[in-house]
Amino acid sequence: MAATPRKNKTGRRILAAGAGLATVGALFAAMPSSAGAAGDAFDAESGYGNGKGWGRMVDVQLLSFNDLHGNLEPPTGSSGRLTRLKEDGSTELVNNVGGAEYLATHLRQAREGHRYSITAAAGDMIGASPLLSGLFHDEPTIEALNKLKLDVSSVGNHEFDEGARELSRIQNGGCHPTEGCFEEGKRFKGAKFPYLTANVTDEKSGKPLLDPYFIWERDGVKIGFIGVTLEGTANIVSAEGIKGLKFGDEVETINKYAKVLERKGVKSIVALLHEGGMPASGAYNYDCDAPGAGAGISGPIVDIAKNVTPQVDALVTGHTHQAYACTIPDPSGKPRTVTSAASFGRLYTDTTLTYDRRTKDIVRTAVASANHVVTRDVDPADDMTKLITRWKDLAAPIANRPVGHIAADIDNPLDAGVYEKPLGNLIADAQLEGMAPADKGGAQLALMNPGGVRAPLTHKASGAEGDGVVTYGEAYTVQPFTNMMTAVDLTGAQLVTTLQQQVSGLNLAAPKILQVSKNFTYTLDMTKTGADRIVVDSVRLNGEAIDPAKTYRVAMNEFLSGGGDGFAVLKEHKNKLVGASDLDMFTAYLGAHSSAAAPLPVPATDRITVIK
Image (cartoon, rainbow, N blue to C red; front, top):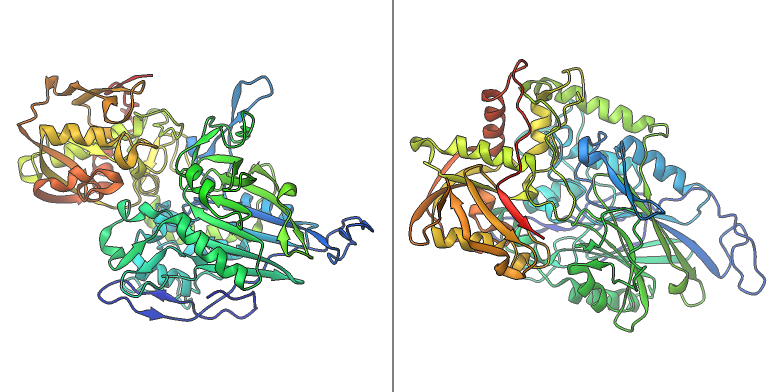
């Protein structure tokens, strides 16, 4: 059950993970954001505006973003860039974007003059975070989001990185169960905004893990929010932390709670959905409606949007880290806005929802959305600067320790169609070296999931360490999950099936191309479809064709060996040996293969031959 905004925060309902999930806490609702009165001109016929927001038609500002992933400091390298489409059809890079200090300033400026302003998020606010936030179990990011006046967020898959019990603490507050309070005399207060998980339920009771919806209200204007995460979350997070939970169909769940909100008299509805799509262009200002409504975007969000009830007026999405502000027809054929603001706080979306007081609904034809760049040419928000400085001082003894040297940026391009990445190759090589000794697992090759590489290694110094120096904090930002490494037996046939599952099954619509160690090569033919994209005869280890009947020792993290990211065949492994963490192997490799006099060069990308 949801509640309308009130000033006093109470506990929130959540089911604790483990044997026999139990309901704890109670309901909570956040204060709405607002900034001054609207200055709209009065229209005698429509009653629009009047300067006090009491006319019939009211413009409600919806500011939204997604996939922040604890990036409080300005992201670096490719993570701090965007691509802009120019008028002549060419593209250019927009550098130096993002950072909580600048996101706060942009959001606060955007709210000015808007009496009715809501700030919402579509999940993955935390998880896979840089050390500044991750070292403290993302308490700094939640504190920052509270200061940003976030009103509501859906839960993303990464909110489950540390399991449902930890998500309960993130929502309700309290010191970490094993590490305690990080600042003397201070108790973590939890999120002041409600996290929504309408489609995450207790397998036995069927009750939602968190509140399924939230109703924002001001001066009689009511907007309902339904929050869902992607149905496939169980395939991409650790199974241990979500025992006893079921992740339901996104469309069925949104449609169910849209009816609930309608019965409560709430006719203006926004879905916050942690699932997304892939626009035809990687440019943040690409007009994906130009060829025709929705034609410029593909992926899971298209079918979802086409089947979500017309009662829902807009969809705010995420997960794919892409930027788009599109319209996709609802089941009645009427255009409906669908947005996503890339990732890491580099963009925010500004959507105008025109609310009709008489019908209590959104005038869909008047909905307008656009993505805006979080530039760093504005004054940084002082409260965010102080927050970042405070937590950096706590993290400094660990974060600033040098672990290696690099000769240039070792990038992790986010562009669609870039399948082999320099940093992915480096990590795979580090994992192979760590697991190759006979007493460590005897691995012959290594596979690394692309989603586990979270940021580039940037040559320019982030602090006082000097250019080319890689600190522990920077390495942690690249590999923040601290997954334990494994070495397992797979047959040659299973290896080939693994490669085929990159581009088929659960990964058919959005391929997940594994990063491979330097001794493993093959050809990926993107002119074909599904499993046929893998040229089987091209798969080689140390130059020799893979024998389907032979057994190979393969290094990978526990997430992959558990079948994560849709690689079901990897669960069929045998003779698993568990080694050190991926982060430990990464830092050890950097230390062993680089020095100030001989920094590590950028790895070549010559392992996967791509036919386009």
